[in-house]
Length: 35
Length: 504
Image (cartoon, rainbow over all chains, first blue to last red; front, side, top):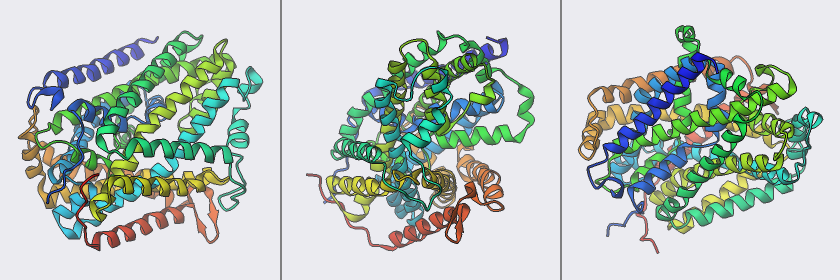
């Protein structure tokens, strides 16, 4: 793959998965998943 | 007596339902093409900014208002003030018209899934080069124009009936059963996308396709068109502006965390779209390699990608053609299914129940029958022409205009600050005052820009699609659909609201 394509893929995956992980780890109030 | 509102069984079921409604056909057939068309990584940069400053706040607004008033869209705006109730009915009509043709597209996907078993459109290069004819002549049996209805395409109509019956049985017990079903309708297409991705990247030419998908040209960020495309993609992909998210929010318990749920829904929907792009463009790259053509010859969006490009790629695959075909079209079907019952249940049935006091079963049955009856128009031989016109009227203009109006009324009349403080009180994330201005100004201005430059400036000077229907052209029909639904919204808004009955 071209370098720019690989960088784009890596950065976007990092942001999206990072965003999801961040949201999941902040689920505290009201009992997390069982809210 | 206060009527007990239907509820999600747990927070995870709500999140699955919201993700399922946001993830739809557009994740596979629109997002990858937009990324390719508008500069790869540069488009992704603009899109992620759009997700954070537009997508999450907009979704929070719809979930939050539904939760606050414990009603679907019309009940929310009635709660703000009786004179605003019409603004909640307009997106209900948008949802109804969308689901009426969306289910027909699902019926086509089912038809292709069945045809995949025998590879009815053939294998090899000759078959790959004739998939356009297969779609138009065999599947659609398309007529000469929108007034030439021809005969019904009976197989499509039968599949449409099956889809509506299936949807009735999923919806008539309400949110608790929907929550259990969406766990599967989210997981199955994800599993199928993984299969497609693995098959795609093991084919020759896949890397070329991925380069087209993601190669980055940051100089395009100075072009307003890229930002325009990215922001409109955010609006279209999250299922906002279709009434349903208000109802889905209203099924949440009072202590639920809207802010975090909206963020999770947005990130999960976006990750799915981004991943789908890998599956789609690796297979597009294979087709380029197999037919020795350029990306512009095979890269497509919408129906063209699903029903012309993909069947061609499947025809050219060295092995497992039928299985991969079935995987792809069942994937489309399941992607569409939870979006369809989101539109039918959250978008239409829940507001009818709130307004007319109907039971859950009665409102669901009436919506399913009405949706099927309208779907007959789209399964005629002129169906594709009407689908194209109605799609432009409601999923472009209707969605955006009703979204703009909703944000203005919530932001300025109800009060964005009041809503933000209400949401922050039960949330792990606290949003600052900037959120108020996103709802009051940024979304209305950005979406007005999209409506004017992406819509009116094109469709007012030129007849949409070149259609002629009696004295009207395609653009006239679009204005007519918007006008009639707006008048009906005002009429429904003036009607007295009956208290809903206790569920049986």
